[in-house]
Length: 213
Image (cartoon, rainbow, N blue to C red; front, side, top):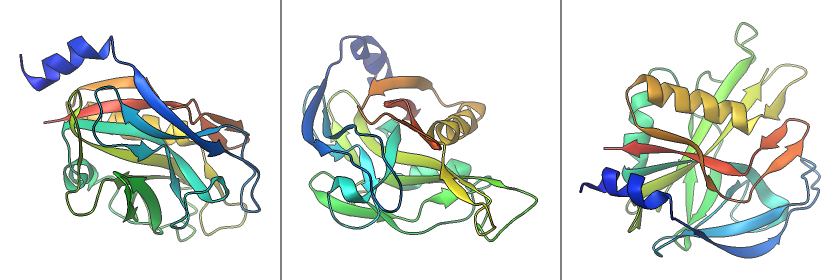
């Protein structure tokens, strides 16, 4: 049985190991719903990761940025995840940080437009992809080599009335792009406990998964 077939069979019985690390609270930058903040390790052990990225290298609810909403697995690396979307998300954004496998990674991500007040394109989807920088991937016995990603929308970025959020809409956009390219996927498959429902801060707390050959 190949790894992907094994993944399909064993996923149904998979549990998650969640270690509670704190509580989200309101911050000066964005008011956040009170919610659990987790360090997450999949069933079977292996590499763990925090379920949010951060605006600086501080593991605190005061600096959470966006929730992890996508898991790329099987034989994934950061470059292999970004490469298929290079034509639709050719630009980069600001630097953010993630705690993965016990160390910091950083990424500017990929986005559709530069974010310089493109009035003709107010919706600008943005994804950041994380794994330890020395390997560009993590490992678990069920998932194989995997990376994690956060998603969000930059709306009217650089213009008056700009806002940022709608992680679910951004997740759906990225997932559609991979589906259109023939990748296998599982929508909202894994519970990560990072749900938010406050204005444009929207997350259902579940990550979709994409198999990268």
